[in-house]
Amino acid sequence: METNISELIARAIVIKDGKILLCHLKKGDHYFLPGGHIEFGEKAKDTLIREFDEEVGVKIMVGEFVGAFENKYGENPTHHEVNLVFSVDSVSDNITSVENHIEYAYVTKEKFTEINFLPKFLIKVILDYWDNPQIFWASDM
Image: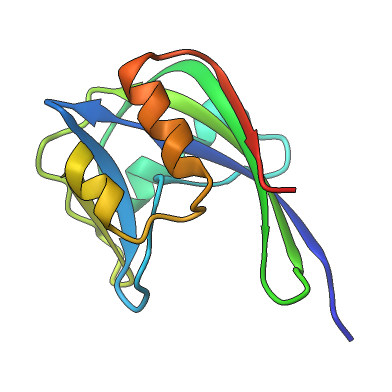
């Protein structure tokens, strides 16, 4: 029996010195925006503060809401995500994960277009935001 899952996630866009901060699962081949699941009753901004503290031991300053996107994945698909995206400042140049399964990397715009970033439809949205920061909405549904 298949179970369909809906998830609410807070994500960060960290652009520093011409590079964007991304996450990479060590056992996977794709990159994605840092962040995590919003717990029941938790503010989205507080989710980012908690996730950065838990995953890299870094205190951050969450900025403004910059956009949202939704996507679906899995077989048939079985997962539906709604992601709230915020700008984040005050992140160190040297981000080291305290978790064994994930790593962080700052990548240039050129490398960003070459790597396997998911969801794919978000690549253009992020590049547009990078050049002209405006609130965005994107969906693959």
